[in-house]
Length: 410
Image (cartoon, rainbow, N blue to C red; front, side, top):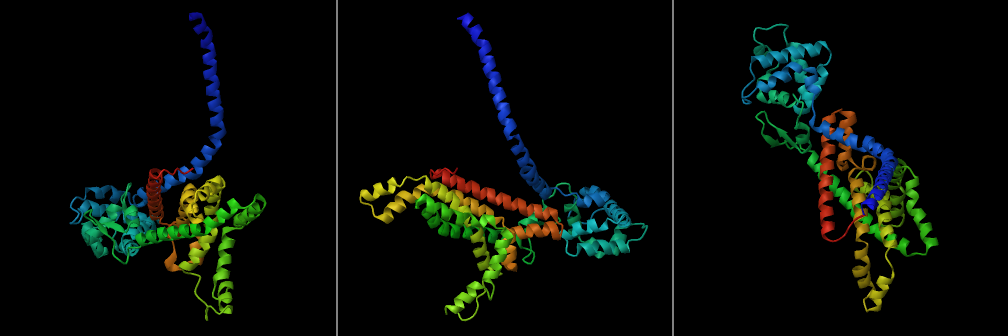
């Protein structure tokens, strides 16, 4: 036995080395894909999450006041003379270095007319003063309000919750209390609600239209089914922008739909079908419908038709056999197509921007606006983080319910 063990030991070692080499080769094959996902997916999302809570914009141009303001303990009173002196020095230095606009932009996120506050103070500040508290307040009386200093404190960084609170229509007072934003400033919760309502509505419309199409494709003979499948895939061969622009032409006041309805005598004057939610629903449903049909088709194609025939042979009515035997087997396809369409719908930007009105824009529009137009990367990242968190929570709840029901996706 000992001799056999000694003879088998080198064989086991070679097998282990061969297994390690196989694993290394397998990892080498997927390494490019992992690298691509890391660079194009993980890093941008991590950067977005970091920008939502990382804020060094003000401290980069006003280093002295952002370093001194943590000593401000009594938030109901004004800071001491050292903080006022640090502010005066930073304002004069940044004005000389032409970086005052950076500080003005950052404070303008939190303060109404924050930009004018910064520039008017810079113009009125004297070169020297015996007491900088009086000089700064004399330059602009808003510095006598603790709420103004609260904005400076919230912007001092490097970690802040300001952008995440703003994305949830909340803000923090000078004393640190979180309050609801005024009605004229509260916007994003309504936009987030509208985004999810539109996403859910488009998902249900795609399911209602895509289910019978997928059933037809799965039950037709292969030659005719393949021909219809080409028609389903045809939208993928056309640019998204072109398809959206085509719906603008079709749904406009004197477009094909209105002209056809007037010619048939159904309506007397053109209906408004564009630049409202009707146009958004129609265009987004057309674009996302194939993403519902394909998962349904893949599941339906694998269902043996003998199940329904067996139920009917046992006396079940056609409708009963379909609803109680066939439909439950298609639930994985419904779940996969529904979650795919829903997640894509809530992140759409081009289609709602082109065919929707001002009150129909989804959260992606505001993310793009704060990224490119107002250059408020912090708020844009916070909106993206809120959308991502809400999507992940809904997906987790959905997956829990689906798992509890015994339906496993994928």
